[in-house]
Length: 227
Image 1 (cartoon, rainbow, N blue to C red):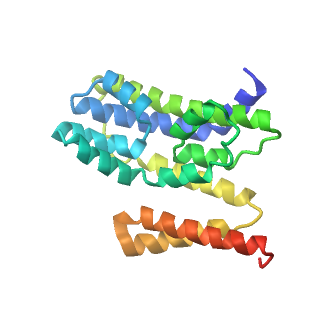
Image 2: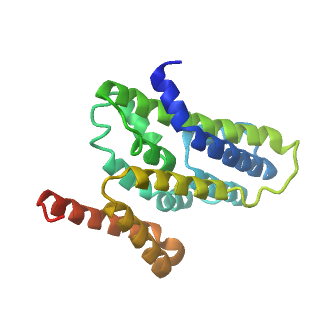
Image 3: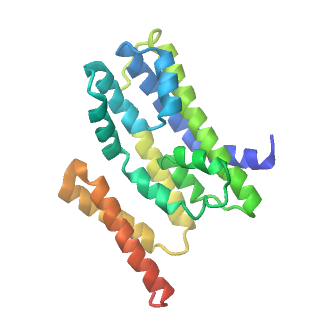
């Protein structure tokens, strides 16, 4: 195992634990609704979108129209558009792997690639790729295991989704400690709380739009030397 792969593996340990356990919960939920491990494997491999996949269990059971599913998933994962835009510069020199890097850009991968410190461009390319592949692998592995175990084990899986929330908090705290300027973190935190109070469960898109707008203003002020 190369040093870069080892580094990516160590960075990914919290995600590995979260994704495998959450993936198992998803796979078991799929199996309990009549969709075995093959379904879990291919949906996780091709979709790789946790929240959307959990919602998809209900869509499959209720036989929701594919067009409706498309728009619902688009809203659920709208934040990934902003992730992609913010990573355009970082992924610009990644060659053919750039397509996969964008496809595999989930919340956790986005957090990790923005936290890790990399010495040079060559190592950066490999590190970003390994982080993305490992996260994808853990999710597919957990989902498939859940599908296989679903018919054998019977226990309450409600509440396991909190693993993902705990992981988000862990990544945020790690980034906050390493950041030289705390302003972007404060903007994201305060705007998210305000949006949650005002827009309730529909807070994500308004929050992302406001955060991006305020970060652009903050960046312009920083360039001009006002901060």
